[in-house]
Length: 106
Image (cartoon, rainbow, N blue to C red; front, side):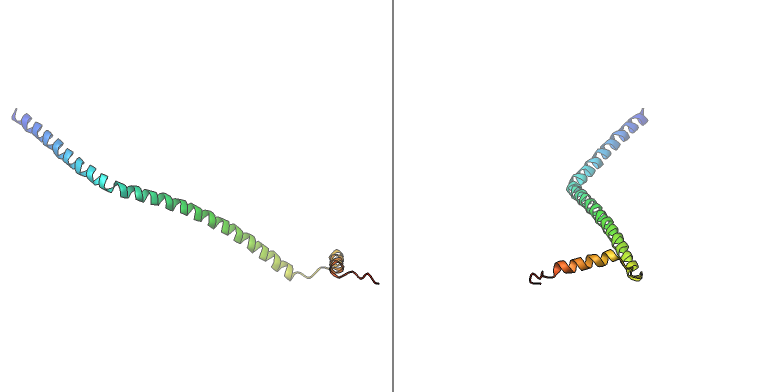
């Protein structure tokens, strides 16, 4: 019977200590909760910024690839011998005629 009373007192004492610890933990949680919410907000903002930077980086890489291709194509055209294109000469002559003033006296 004595052990039963001792065991009962230990259980009650353990419950009391647990309640006190939980109150302290609850108070600490309530104290730091605003800071936690602020950090969560900062995290979400940083994640959005990171996604935006990833998109910008991807766009820049695509643009860079296209520019590299354009430069490569222009360099290739510069290295190739010039092909005589009669239609190109005709276009140049017509452009020159269109740009020159019309002589109405002649």
